[in-house]
Amino acid sequence: MIAIGCDHGGYKLKLEIIKHLKKKGIECVDFGCPSADAVDYPDIAFPLAESVAKGEFEKGILICGTGIGMSIAANKVKGIRCSLCSDTYSAHTTREHNDSNVLALGARVTGVNLALDIVDAWLGAAFVGAHHKQRLEKIKAYEQK
Ligand code: RB5
Image 1 (tube, helix red, strand yellow):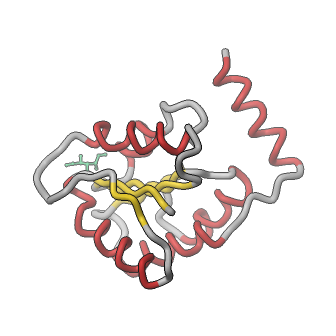
Image 2: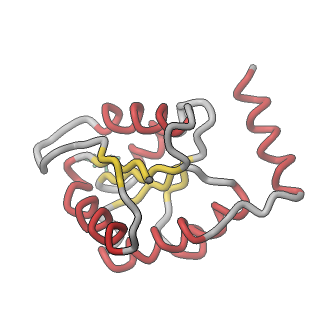
Image 3: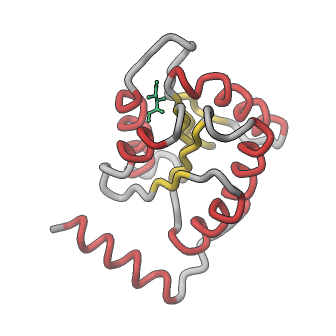
């Protein structure tokens, strides 16, 4: 189960991602927004990110026009490692090295087919641990200050 959310800029791409994941047998819980009417991205990013941080979802996907607003907001939530990706190399590497738990996408930057490949690359990769773990521990320690 994946948590997914968007603002108006990401609404159409969100529907494509939900459809794509459904075909692969992956269900999404939709945190909104429910239409292409304008909303403020933090209103979607914070509830989704908090839900992931609490462990209610292992992973989340946030989409806005650039992906930047969503990633800035999500990364304010303790325990969230939100990665804005516009290529598949970054998408799988951020899972492998950063144990990314939220993916941000920019619907006005990244075309639908590439976005779907990015989603697949991100979901298909796993954290490799090892020396990357100590780096994440440093981020965790900083968050606790
Ligand atoms: C909305 O117009 C746009 O600002 C938003 O989707 C996003 O790109 C913000 O970072």
